[in-house]
Image (cartoon, rainbow, N blue to C red):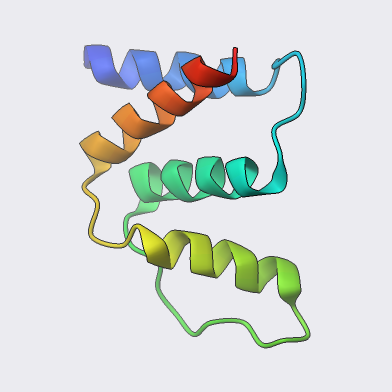
Length: 84
């Protein structure tokens, strides 16, 4: 396991114990970066208007499409660190 992977795992754990809950935009960014780091670019069709949560998640992931896994992990770590 690389140092970046260990830091990412620690940031994931830290994200679950933040003193205050982040706002919705920050949560979507965290979700998108986590998924980009784990799975890569979003695939499939964009959810319809009857699924606003799925649509917001899809849009957040689509914004960072093309970001490589290592950079997504680094960005996630930096974001979680800024919320501590």
